[in-house]
Length: 320
Length: 205
Image (cartoon, rainbow over the protein chains, first blue to last red):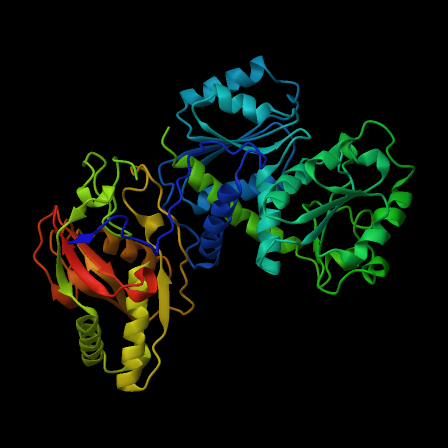
């Protein structure tokens, strides 16, 4: 007589239960690691001769972008197509004020079209969560106001882990406009959960109050913290989101916080230069550094497709 | 593990409606040994000889193991082939989960593992390797997946155990052992690398 219980010790199981991905904050460390592991397997699909797997055949995904985006939208579109899902692109330019009632109607319409998963970008923080609560369809947050941009956070973490093997104890600095950056918030949550040390660095006007409560270190002097950093994630100066004057001039910003060749000399030799794009060359990042050997900006773009494939795959196949 | 879905092995899934088996809730159940460690080794050596007999020109041959235990078996077959012929045969790894016909119907999602085929399939004879051949659905998925990587000249199939009950017109070219089974039985292949044990057993309901 032998015990035949769970027979498969070589197969790690993970029970994914979310139909939505609204933030990195809500994810457990295990969920983040499961997404990253799934993304690793999906990365290979994009290197095949036939860059397509039938995993989501017959599923419909809607890209619903209330805010301009090319990179994220096409990345999601490509991810969906590589999984054989059908994808619809709704762009609703000019109706960025359509919240509340408007969103609920949108959700109803989408449900009536039997769409399985909605990928949404919206200028209001919390819009994705609202949609998820009112809709049967799964909702992937592709950026909501200044709240979170979870897939960007996850792909940044995926890229760091790919290059540095582990995040435990790694020194990561987010540079620039932390106040308006949903990318920063998603990064902070994820990085902290996986054991990295996070510093935010920028002009005082662009560092939100109480951000230290998320467990990050604040610095206003980039040259001081630069030498010990393993990763510099440089955020875009979001001129479109800034209503007031947060710094005297673009030139002054570039001089204080821009990553130039000169400044790179103070950094570790194996520092990673990251940027969520699109880059303002010569402002937050000089052209030479963006194209330099330490830059992993294009790896971020490649990995973005794999991470979004993983997220769409996991959420869309959850039983509703 | 929920009662709605039970795993026979990594790739074959019972219908949702089936009730939990004693084995799944940790109750002692009788098992029938089929192969022990030395006989697994002998069987693999024989399969390696058969593969070489059928494919004397090793340069056009490659092995692809199906995750998880097929990969281990493919690695061992590669070693055996090298021992016999003195030639290294390329080996790939295939995860078929994305090609399953029941992906949208299973309650618990499979964990997607690595696929790694670092060579061009064009013109090669591919020997697919898996542990147990049962309904044939895993192999159907594997064939679809392989075709997405290129157009091999020929695909052959090697399995350690053929337990019958096919649901598709699929057969193996190389079989370690044929075991007549009831559909209610489990065939458990345990290998040192994945299970820290080396045996094949059939467990009764």
